[in-house]
Image (cartoon, rainbow, N blue to C red; front, side, top):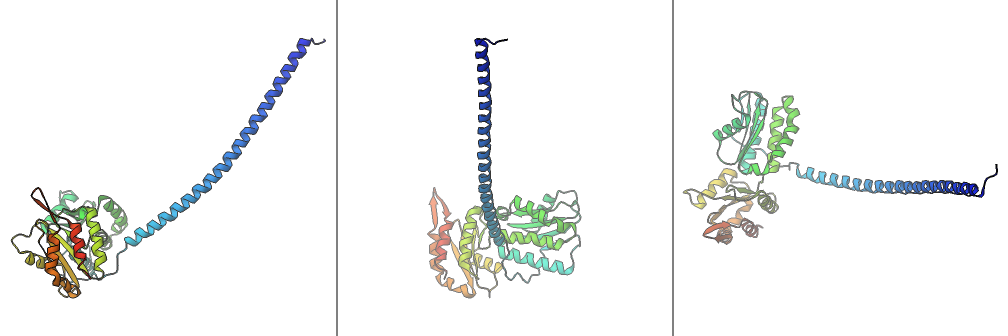
Length: 331
């Protein structure tokens, strides 16, 4: 049957449409293939870039970790001290005589060096008290003022680190959580000596040695900044600024000498500047190769008093300025 002109037109139109459809399909597929290729290359470049960034970040993190590790290492120093005072109370009887003596010596040194109270208590009976309450009461029966007590609780097996005063600013709850995670294997195998020593070492690393704020007026950041300045100035010598807001009925000189003799040996190379922040009175005690500072006693006292600011009838000490002024006298 012969196709009409109309039929042929529609057939050609149909074929054209089919051809266009096939062409468009190929075009779309080609375009998609190109896009996929570009995307693939781009992803590889991004991956390589990210890999480089990750490697750099990892290297930086490793560098930071190295810095942090170096800062967290105990520096070599003499930690021996003669003491007849008990700082370790092994009520459970789990330490050997040598362990008890060594741990007591280190705890005594820590207390004297950082001018705090310190104790380790090992017990297998806390009665009906919670560990935190037991540790607090034990501490308050022993001491008053700033300090730390490590309770090894073999009764309910929940150990506790009690902090009072400025140690609580520097040994945070997060530090304690990490510390317990670290010493748990030691406690499981009954190595109480090593566990307790690690707690004390953490205190040594965290606490400020060169400034003692018994007045409680400085922030952690202020104490850390001042401690750093004094540490740099001290070198191999002992140097401390002791801040208080009360000296009782004593003269400033008597109070300062009492504190100096409590913390330093007379044949050591030491200097301690005691300041009453309520009125700016001060006195510096020295020994050994730091004795030259006593020759500037009056000048140092005058410099400290100049750092007292008065506002609305209330006197406050600019501690930053006081430290800076003291440093001008140190050779």
